[in-house]
Length: 299
Image (cartoon, rainbow, N blue to C red):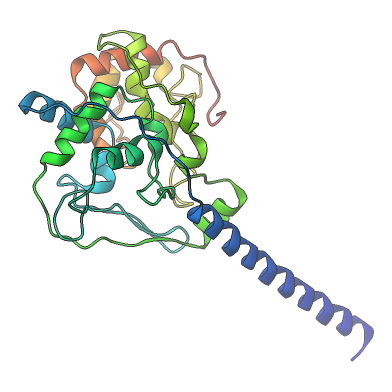
């Protein structure tokens, strides 16, 4: 074997060894992050009874993204089925076979919703608890009241099996569990009163941050497949659309899934947000108008 061939063979062998080592590191690091146990002290909330509380809880579940992962009947949906990102199913939240156990407590609901942590203390994969951490105690209680009221559905729990790209993103910190992001000991539930103003709009907008980012400037959605389109820029920056919209345009777009020019909003945008009531939409619009302009993706 001549010198050039030897260099090529040795170089190729080193490349293969490095690739195998990197792959092993990704497997180890992603597994470590998924298996990490979080010590959570749950602050209980009063869970009301009665039709009014259940109705409020249902409204929250239907308009804050719960049904997009768990389905209209809350028995679970396939959220991602992609070779790169893996197969991720939202769990069955009913008390049917394959759903929540009979002894699932109010504290267990709070731990999962507000902290993104399961009963065993592990972070829930893709559970967007950063959106829900500051839910008011009244809304948290109403949501639990509704979850306890839903009819049991027998449906086996689907897999939560991150694929190679998801594992790489986890290992390198590009994809982080909500449990990693939340300062669990410092959570302060909101106490804002419902009103058509920016303060309440900020409360409503917490459910938008998972895709659009903390400052709502949009861009790449880390939790989705590589082919997922970027989230829209919701700030009044010129590279976004909202700077040219009116409140009526905004409300109509959410309700119809079509922009003022007639083009269809990406189906990645949950249709459930169109179910926000008039007061919530007015408040959300008022809040978006107060945001400082940010270029797309500058989170």
